[in-house]
Image (tube, rainbow, N blue to C red; front, side, top):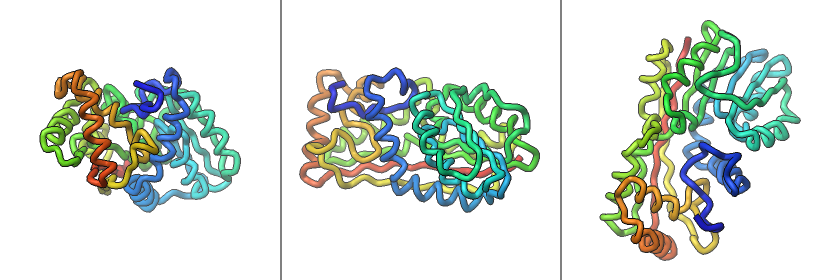
Length: 278
């Protein structure tokens, strides 16, 4: 992938990526997507956070979502963020300087949380299960560290809903086919959040979804739409799934870029959210 095409499809190995700064910028931009803003607002409304509660964010990334909830926890509250990326956590720690509650951001494994049983009143996990090989284990860990009568919030993506319209029906069909292929990770986990919660012994009490649509993007100014991966990365994904010959990569990227320049570009993606109780 060239230096201008560094917006990849995933965040499995952030600290090993030579373009960490680009990944961080993309994550910051994704937090501003309308669908994410709506789901986080819905989450806050349904969590009913109280002063003094203990909150764990699994796969916290830059920590901005959890830190936005910190004022609800008050000075007696406690916020813990766990992520695989030390670089992400470094930024989260820096951003935590002004919140009222105590905070701790640690490198950790969602499938083996280094936290005591029943130690949190609230556990949240946003757009993380899609990158974990076994989300059943991860949600089970969230259930383990949740206190009696605690609340879990799960927000994640259903990549089978991803669609692209650039005036090429064949390309659109290939993308749809590729995104339905999970290939070793639960990329369609968003639609299964309630099922995962029940399987862990939790009771879903509310659910919703939100669809984000990208319609405005200038490929001459940015290699990727706001908060999204590059079209080169998308084409390479099609090659990986067998939906595109490697020799056709450049043509596919050019087709998408040209459509965007003409103002004939559209992409959509749906994300889901579930709140469940112990």
